[in-house]
Image (tube, rainbow, N blue to C red; front, side, top):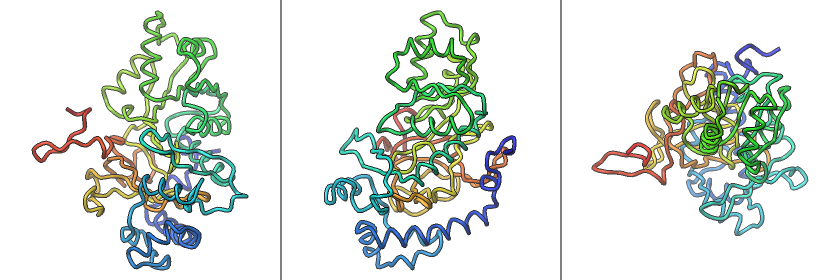
Length: 354
């Protein structure tokens, strides 16, 4: 039986020293396989005069250039359809999950069978840490299809022993509300904007949120759920405890969420190395300082990312959370996108902060 608060205590409450040792062992293997199989990553290493064997510790990562979504698109264009960053053999491919492609061609990321299992296990942890338990009824209003959060939560909810109602985003809002009323849904998963729309529509229909069985909601796919005012609107409008969710198609759709302490989103460091860097110098920022998140896969098999530039700003803390978890947290969640940053008289703002 898992610990009451931790689904995988041996992993989630590991000491920082032991976690680092495990990360470095996995990192060496990952960089070696990427350098051997990918011309993109081979060129990245060569550009700084490095070989795979030079990357021995986490500190060595900062020597390497970051990889951007634009570079992945160009790699795909030159080597269609999956580029050279797909390093597993095609026989291992099981699922295709491209990025949304709202600002350019989508990036075709691949999951192997092992990757499907990894994402399912990580997503089980994210659900567990904000309070989902066996017997819950999860109304999963994340999109099903090429954008993958719907599927990862579907797999994980079923594995935890929950009834999953796969409403997705194509179910009309009135039907979503009817399911909340009649199916006994206790957990809602969606983007924060869609959850607010459901709450507003329910209010217009005269539905009292206190009459719903719903008790939890976790909201991702866009910024907002970690914002205090948005959280209050979600909690008041749906009569729930609301939590923040985070993921990226290129890295993992649902690999980070808040726990019941609501002290930041827990990032799965057994899955990725998490760096927080200055957007101009690309050097690591001090703990607690604002920087851009950069991710390196440790266990992704099919399409691993080595120093992937997320474009997302956050502040990191390695202090043990009151829940007992030791993995790094983004305190306050992801606070904005680098593309949205506005500099005025030397100060940095996001449109949502003005």
